[in-house]
Length: 633
Image (tube, rainbow, N blue to C red; front, side):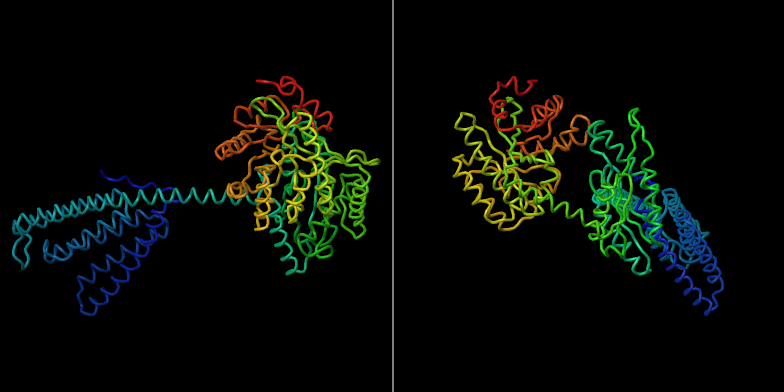
C-alpha cells in the first residue's frame, strides 16, 4: 500500500522540512557543479563543461522557484536535472556498468522526501525505462562500450532491485510523512492549549479583559517607558455605581451582560496602547501610558464616564452603567503599581462620596477615607465590648433525608447608629486591624456553648465555625479550640472548622502540625468556598479534610450555566471518590436543590430553607418535621 501525498496544510512540519532541506541541497549541488566545472575548464573538457553548465542553469532555476514558494516544482526540476545528467553520462560511458547507476536509489530517496507523488513515480518510470533501453542497446549491439556486454539477468536484477528499493523508500517515506503530520497536529493542539491556559491565567473569563495580574505587568511597562521618556502615566480605578442593586433586581445574567457592556465601552474610550482590565466584581482598572499632562487624563476619564452612561437595553429594560472613577498619577502619586492602585482606590471612594458618576484625582486630603476606616474599627472595638455582636445560625440539611444535620455560625453586628452592618464591610476591617483574633475566639466560644446547649436539649448538630487566615497563623489555635470545647462540654466530633483554600496553600510545618493536632482531638475539617482558589487534591489528603463546601457562585447558576454544572459535578464526583461530604452553599430554589440531589451532593444550605437565624428561631426550625423544613422530590 502506497502512502498518500501529504496535503500542504498550515503547520505541516513536512513542508517546512522539505523547503529547508531542499534549499540546503540545492546550494550544495550548485557548489559541487561549480567546482567540477572549473576542473573541466582547466582540462579543456568542453563537452562535459557544456553539460555541467546546462545542469547548473537548471539547478539555479530550481533554486529561484524555491525562493518564490514553489517547492514542489523546484524539487521536481532539481531531480529531473540530476537524473537526466546521470542517465546521459551512462549512455556516453559504460551504460549499466557505469557507477552513475548507483545514484538512482539516492535520487529515489530524495524524490520520496522532497518531491510530490507524481514526480516520484515519473522518475522511477524513467529510470526503469533508461535501464531497459541501455540493456537492450547493449544486447542488440547499437550501444557498445569497452566492457563485455551485459546479460539479460543483469538487466532483470537491476530492474527488480530498483523496484524493491523504490517501494521500500516510498512506504517508509509515507510513514515518516504521516508521523510528522500527526506530530505537527499534536504540537499545534498543545500550543493552542498552552496559549488558552496562558490567556485564561491573565484574562477575565466573562469580559475577556486582562485581569489584575496582567494589569500589573502592563502598568510596570508603562511606568518604565515613562521613566525613559520623561513622560507621565496614570492608573484609573473604576467601580460601578449601584451594580449590586441592579444585579439583585434583574438577575445575574443581566449583571453579566452589563459587565460585558462596560468592558466594551472602556475599550472604545481608551487608546490603542492603553490597558483596560477587570480587577474583580464590578471593579475595573485602566492603565494610561505616555500622558502629556493632567488635562489629557481628565479628557479620557470624562469620555469614559460618557460612554458608560449610554443606555443599554437588557430584556426590554433600559439601564445605564454609571461609575465612580479614581485617578492616581505617575510620578506625583507613586512610582509603582501597588502605590498607584492604593491611591486610585482612595480617589474612587472620594468620587463615590461626592455623588457618584464622576471622577477624582488623588490628593493627600483623601486619606480621610483611611480615617473613616479607623473610625469603623474603633466602633467595632467599642461594639464588641458593648455586646453589639451576636451569632446567627444557618442550617445545613442532609439532601437525601431532609433532616437538619448541622449549623454554620455567622457573625452579625447591629450598630446603634449604622444599623445592621454587612459582614462584607466589617470582616475585612477586622482582619486588617487584628480584631478578628478576639472576635474569632468569641465566636468559637459562643458557637460551642450553643451547640452544647442544643445537645443537652436533645438536638445533636455539627457546629461549623469559620477560621480566619490571621487565626490560622497563630500557633495557639488548637489551644483556643480545646478551651472552647472544655468550657462548653461539647464533644469534639460535633465541631467542624471551616478553612479556605488559600490558608492551606500557605503550607508550613507549623500549619501541618497544628491541623494534625486538631484532627487528633476529633474535630472535623472542611474547605470553605471550594473551587474558587487553588483546588488541589494533595492538601485534601495531607490535611485529612472531611468536607468540601461548594461555593455559592457555582451553585447559584447551576441550572442555567453548563460550565457551573460541570464544575459542581466534578467537585461532587471527586469528593465521593475520596469519601468526603459535599455541602452546597447558596441554594435558593427547588430546581437547584433537585439538581444537586441528582448530582449526588450530600448536604446543602441556603435561603431556600431560611436565612441565618438567631439561636431560638433556628432551634424551632431544626426541630420541625422534615416535611416542613425541606421539600421532598
